[in-house]
Image (tube, rainbow over all chains, first blue to last red; front, side, top):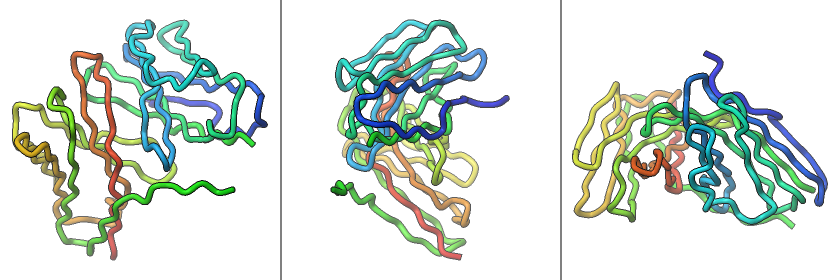
Length: 112
Length: 113
């Protein structure tokens, strides 16, 4: 099994640009989670989906952030427009049980 | 300018010694508590979990202890190895909310050969 796949692994962009992060969960997993990790705030849950439906987006920082899961094998996290304070590592995780999540390698985002 | 980040608590141990990593939690409504290991440049990796109605669970070289009275969780690693060097996070799991995880700050474990 390839595990959770995220792309790109690194993204450098300029303030104001749109950024799209992608995630392919493990096949057969029905829950998908997006996290953000910074030194200041640690690991924060942004949003999670169950069976492709967004369940809790209370962690999404503001309207500039949006996430979609059009099918069971793909999800995107979009930031538009991006700001320097969005610089972080973004992780996607998937699970088939409620007490073990499998994390992807993360996308390191730098907004200049 | 450069932002000031939090400094993670650090635990330094000698190879072969036992390690104990501690975590305090705040919400008594958590269903499970989970320990994750994060190596540099990688995503967190599940180590072991414990249900909230248990006080001890053992895995391979790891033991998790839960004290609900003082809201304290610990991870014990026996015979610590250089490969155990990583940041360790405890997380509260809300089983009835789809397995939502709330992570603690993290502790950096450094193993000296």
